[in-house]
Image (cartoon, rainbow, N blue to C red):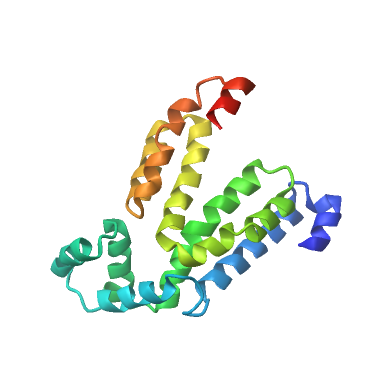
Length: 196
């Protein structure tokens, strides 16, 4: 990526940049999905939850939801992967890596003037490594990133669907809701400075 940063042809949106972008995203997903069990602050606990979910029946899922105080969508995905599909914990991590890494990368590809530099910032400033510990928060963030695309297009129904999906993983989704309506307002520099 550092070599691509120096060469201006990789910083423009073209086929070669798209291929490099896809390869980098794939590497990030695989790196996150096949990480060790001790990598990430909550990974070990998520693995214990995952193994417990394989023993639950669907009726016990509601009790688990009340005991662990986790969002219902998170528990349903956990139940689906472990109990119904019988997949390994790494498949589960890869699923979460996809929904937490791909949407921010799509935003980078869509809006960045320098894709390679933006990807480097995404990795080096800690957002990528945050997805190792905060699985639910990053899944929520992934849906929020998709929501931003619909804000720009002024498509309220897909935006609200993204909000609903985000709410299934973490309660922090609520912060994106008013942004849809703020997008239509015009702010001058003084108002922005006062808010910040």
